[in-house]
Image (cartoon, rainbow, N blue to C red; front, side, top):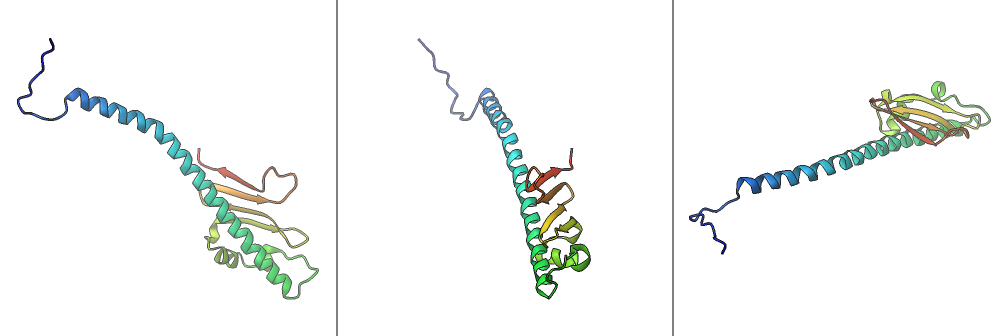
Length: 140
């Protein structure tokens, strides 16, 4: 017959039970951490693409305004005819993050390079470009 151990009224977990629970928690954490890091990276990538879109829309709006002021038929040079600070204010981003803005001969924004220090997003309407928005991380 099996004997039952009496604990003399003491209640609680044994050391082995606690170690087993800790090992299970460590295994679950090891499985979840890479997944969470992946979600964080995707969120950062989507954030910089959204900020780049804001810059593109703001720049196009100001180019259209300049065109509407009577500059029809003229090529509007974004960097000389429009203040980059106005674009940053309209897009609600830091002006130091805007690296480059170009418009084509039809006064459509064709290229924007935007970076937030660790990541760079390039908007390019060139037909040879792989993607419209290309995100590159500058961290190793």
